[in-house]
Image (cartoon, rainbow, N blue to C red; front, side):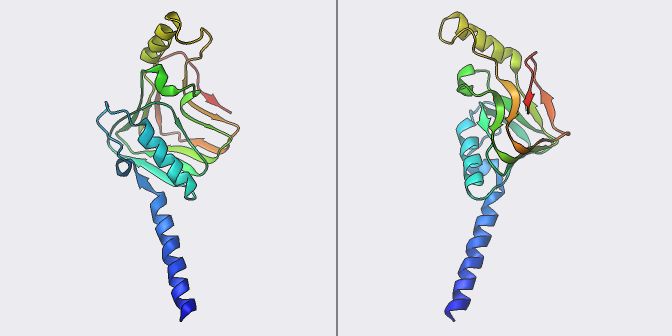
Length: 174
């Protein structure tokens, strides 16, 4: 009897962990209004999903404002059609990150779907230039790119994702 009970406990614990890895962004308090800074909520969701074995963070119709977010092992961001990940125009929302969406040394990371990544690079560059001119940032501070996957294994940026950079800055994908 104990073996049967233990088997059910293990089975249900496994199912609970599996069910938690595919998450809707709104479950994490992410707002689709285009003006709420969702950086912290999105990053917490990514961290959670990665820590629990991986899965997908789903974004549905709406505009999701964010600063830099770091993808971690076994995490996919899925942007449904009419979902827009909108880059912040405040340079400090990037905290020195190389890109709006970035990963370094991660495995099995992806951004998929038919949604849009909107970098708003012209306004971001203006923010960066203003901070450099006022002496708050070093003159050699680079403009973050749209995405950067460095030293990653199995990193995918889906071909149907629409990328709107609005600046001359390049993307990094190595």
